[in-house]
Length: 280
Image (tube, rainbow, N blue to C red; front, side, top):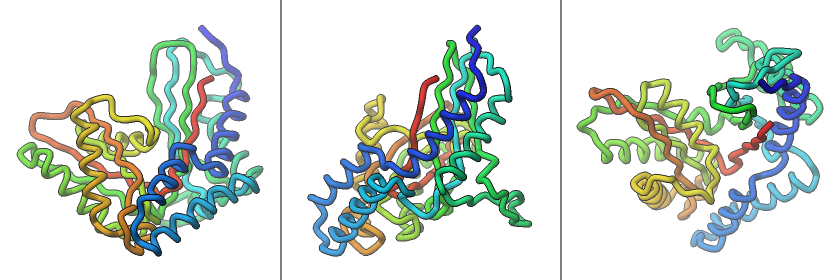
């Protein structure tokens, strides 16, 4: 049994959220520069130039990439042979979030109640997804999720007979409806299978896979490529002003499901798909 002090988790979470908000991932920056060379629309080219410049200035000056510094979402793989002492792991994570948003001068965007709408003042509580795994380590993936894109996400309970064509149609319908709202170019996370809530979680987790990493399953790797091509043929373009760069990538995660169901969730993020991870 390995003992881990809760203060280690607090510090790690604080650094993850500050770094995620300041520094755009290299895989995303590389894709932006690649699509800049391919973009045929002059205004689309200009928008991509501004997006790239914004990311570079944010990193240089250590300030947030976007004014919406997101709701704090974490995926935590907790080794079954780990014991966290001090605070509980959830309290430690929330303390790390609290420190990040205060010390990093990040906008605090969380309201305590969805209808009463009073701000909590420290961007907590975080949304934490736990998975118990083998081993003596803790893997933490932190995602500040902005709501310009989150609000464009959707879920649909398809019939098994709808098949892959039904999935494709739903994804394209969701992206078209989103239009310029999620600040394209976007990254599209798709969860297929499980139950309603499982598909939704999978769609968000899909956004954590690097753009440089293909789906391990050839069938789904091909489906991701097909969807990316179809999305970029919609003509929405950078910032919704037209062009061939509507999305930088499509990522699919799937899970076994019931014989009577085909749940599909689409979680969209803007080009600033902010996420960082650490293994403790």
